Length: 295
Image 1: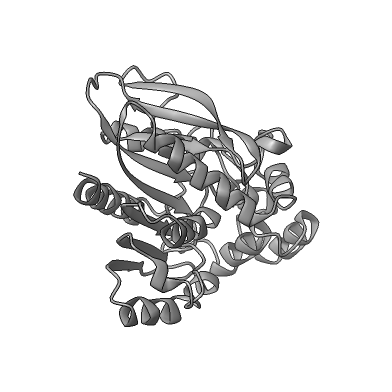
Image 2: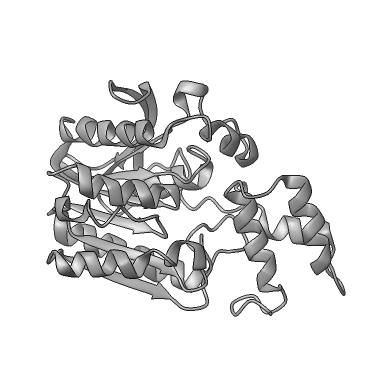
């Protein structure tokens, strides 16, 4: 079956990449299975270049953009990984305090795409912090394959504590109002959901295609949620009906958007799963949601 948004590519290619990117198969197995779909003018090499990340040509906001003050800081995470490195970014012309956003990476550390998202949040008028949960292991290694292997060595609940500590860092930052939200992607989507469970003072959470907390944890959620799902993301979407039922049963404030024809990772503009129209819409909804709830 052809992909609805990329008719020249078989949808199974995206499913294979999703399995590979989430450690369900080795790179050798991924390439072997990919060869089945190298037909016509498509080669394995061209398919690989289409689905694998290209950070060099897709950065939207450069690290040295004069509109921003972007720096790298370290903060303490006593319950997590000790000292954590993070990108801190805010508008360079801001003189007053700003609401804050914690930006949470996928299952491969603080790669260039997520760092870019942190800067996009700052351009929108927030002070953002984008931590690297791989810091205790040396930090994002420069490529996603090694990053995934490194992140598998860390306990996810300890990483959750690292991101909660980032919330605490922002809350006490002199340039922050103390009104803080979180946005995360994939693994970061799960972190965003769990921060809504674990952080009573969190003002808003925006999980992109993230795993869900247990239904028993839902009563602890205080923050309003805005959830984004790719319509073709069967793996993550399987848990949504039970989560939504629990949110309704506990009278939680939420809004959810399912982008039909979009894959898991549709917001990530560095890979072939990227859907420009849906990504732009989802991000505009995210920023408006934060402006509404963090003011």
